[in-house]
Length: 531
Image (cartoon, rainbow, N blue to C red; front, side, top):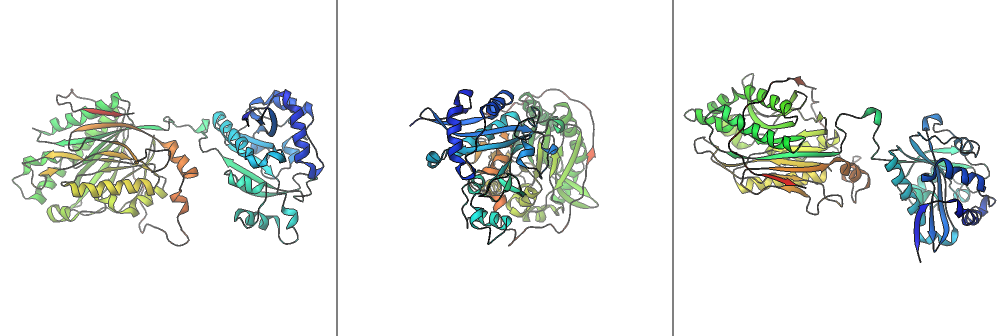
């Protein structure tokens, strides 16, 4: 047996007519005249598909393009087809409207209808259409009309309590019922002239009028694994940061990611002071470092996730991560869960805001180190539309690193998002409480067919300074949400449990513009590019 799905040709009409007569014997054995099929093939040839079995056409789908707002949800088959003339076809229409799909009764066990639906979906994606609309018959309704309304019948078909040869098949092909149409197809005695208004949405559709400057779904990340070492002054440390900005910019990265407390080498100047005093002295230079990172984001045209730095506000000490956008604006996230070590040695307190941040590359979330070990935070961010979660971290032992790594991997899977972790390596012998560091920076993915089998997009060599350059595809997240083997966010039992915030975040955006570059850097660590 040889089966082929292809576009319909004029020479297929004889087979087409024979199949239509068989299919519609229950409603009079009607069929499309040849002149109308020829017209469809002239005005929209790429929208007409057939399945050929051993050289004979035994299944077919016909469609037109429409501007759906011209018709709305309350239309009939006659109206949508222009009184069966197809004059309603609009070459610039934003929806594909299915006007016919059938399979010869003798071939229905081959599941040929699915091939036709797949061909339509591929056409929608290639033409950048919003999706497929169609009016669907409910041929088994006549058996239940005395017991229930069409709406009740449809609900029972959805719950698989009743089988309907048309609707059951359409639901299994990712269509959903938008509403019930009355008097849709006169003469359809099996459906009692009722029909379902069916809709399939193209998750890859891009509204050309609403495109943002950055429309590519491929986002390039530059994740820094930062070597802790002593710098003679702050300028030297900032030159090292600029080297990384320059390096990832050469690879046209969208994000540069730095680790937690990357600027603590500057505490060496205060090592003779008690640790709580030294960290507050470091906080005195946070504004200056922040200003320079904002300038680098503009100069190198890259969004910078600026690790974290200490911040004193109204006498209270926070651990704060900053997002520096390449348009010059920046925002902050304050670490919420403070480790016992940070409390004991520094006297830090936690922040109170959980929210996502808009960027030209989609919605992102920020969590700092210990925060990623609390799954509630990332779930709230996922509910706000987060696509990439950035986690700057600093761990001294492999045990601590393992907690961060494994929890970050879990967050990627359970929230159907990407997670990038960036850490510090090396040692700081002249900085109290910053003696040793262990890290293996990485980018994690959900776990399904669209992603690597081990759910790891890229990872660095442990305990070596380097940059990971790797791409993540946001369209794969959309595909996962809608068509994944499991759909975690959709399948939550929110009727049984939920996660809510007790304090709502306040919108906070600061704009900082311009300024420029400095010289080049001497120390050039390796750059790893992951294709």
